[in-house]
Amino acid sequence: MQMKRIRILVCFFIIGTCVYGKEYHVSVKGNDLNSGAETAPFKTIQQAAQTAYAGDVITVHAGTYREWVNPPRGGDGEDARIVYRAAPGERVEIKGSEPISSWQKQDNGVWKVTLPVAFFGDYNPYTDLIYGDWFGDHGRIHHTGEVFLNNKSLYEKETLEKVLHPAENPDASDKEGATYTWYCESENGEVTIWANFHNYNPNKELVEISVRRTCFYPEKPGVNYLTLQGFHISQAATQWGAPTAEQIGMIATHWNKGWIIENNVISNSKCSGITLGKERGTGHNVWLNDRSIDGSLHYIEVTFRTLQNGWSKEQIGSHIVRNNEIFACEQTGICGSMGAAFSRIENNHIHHIWTKRQFSGAEIAGIKFHAAIDTQIKNNRIHQVGRGIWMDWMAQGARISRNLLYNNDQEDLFFEVDHGPYLVDNNILGSPSNVWDMSQGGAFVQNLFAGTIRINKETGRYTPYHLPHQTDVAGLSIILNGDDRFFNNLFAPIAPDEQKVYGLTVYNEVGYPCFVDGNVYYNRALPFAGDAHRVDAPDFDPNVSLEDKGNEVYLSFTWKKLTGLQTETVTTERLGKAKFAKQNYEQPDGQPIVFNTDYLNAPRSEQPLPGPFEALNDGNCRIKVWPNIINCK
Image 1 (tube, one colour):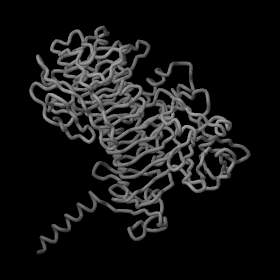
Image 2: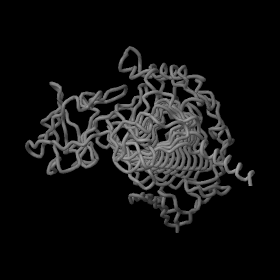
Image 3: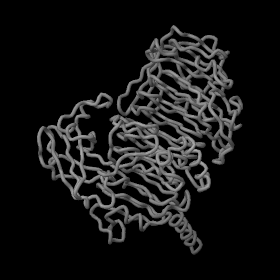
Image 4: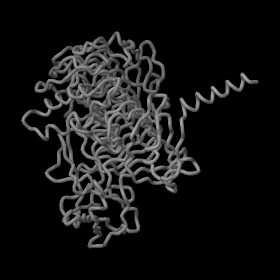
């Protein structure tokens, strides 16, 4: 009996200290002078953050929390995290805004409110302008602040006249919504905002204005191993996240390691939703502050400064971002310079990014990463985002697999000045333009290409490549294109434009040899000249189409038996090594890959079908591609 009691105590000790730690509760009805117990909860998430240590859990109960959560410390490792979670089954909102209900009616649906500068504390988004390296302002000013009517943002204008007499914005996806406008002035210690709410009375609706620069962000590095789970996060006055700057989204990791950001709904950021980015000390908009040298040279200098500042697998990155919905952000859904290395981006639904089109720049996409070293981007749905996934500089060891991209009006994928190896496999690329390739050393395996590919050399920039699976720079080179692999892909353009070129013919003359085999070319798609085991059917239209039904997406097409098909299973060994990095196309841990499953994770045969699906029969197919359930007949 005594021995049994001792075992129970040891078991309890292990569970209590190593897994769970203490649990603190937060409620809108709480008090920050409380203990944080379930019966005596804190009122603010920040008070719980000040109290929690490694291994602790912060459970936040239903309600709206208007605060910037600034965690002072992180966990001690994967098994001793600090977990911030919404209470199961409860809707918990963290907002960067404040409600305003003191509007005064003017004319033509326009109302105004005047607020003292003291209302904004130490940060005023109505004097803070969006700026930064590679930002395009379209010849006007843009504030980081924003006005929201029933959780939908209005369009900032540069003159009061454009609020009094609004016009549709031809570039915006929501033409009518673009006539809901606002304008601000700051003088004499006051901020005045005019807004055109049309037929709505803002004092009877939910009207909010952004007042905080972020919602969840540690202001110092060294806050590792946090989990953020189950929240609705919105309406922060975020700043432009250039790769040469401190990057602060509504959720931002700030040069830390090992965060898990999961099961959240993230929306209405003035710039970025999630940033996995660098910090300020290695440079902050350095090109804007020094035009004497080119921006690419500045970024090379920033890269070396980050190495001096501890950029390595042991200290930075290795984040997991999964199962989130991210939308209504005007720069990126997720971005990161350096800090996204060694991370996993999985099962996210990213949509309606950069829809207002009031500004532009070289940092806008659903996902935009610099230095995606060994970063895995898998099973994401990305649409209506302008550019889908942008891998800019140093995408080495990155893998883009089993993603669904469609209805993007720029490209689904853009690879800019990367040297490889990077992998693109089992994806559905359904937009009119699928790939812009300004890189070399990519491997494209078992994808569906429903649009065009274009390529560009880049001889004016020398960009880095790295030692395998490390951040250490091995060398720099220009981009002559080539050193690419295309195995077992399906080229099936949707409603091809006679003025455009489809297929792989664009690779017939590139700087380095390409390795191409086993691809199928339908519906005016043209082959690569050296594709020995291809199937050409330029007159066959498989009638590829995508149906977006909200929570479900279906792919329909006609499949016919491929006569003379001679494909082989693709493996790490078959792909070889990228020319510059001399690195295999392999797992982040150096293990080889055998591409023996398809988009739906179904097993491949020894002679796999080209494209992302294996279990296909002749005739009409309709496949549920989000979520992934196959139903062909």
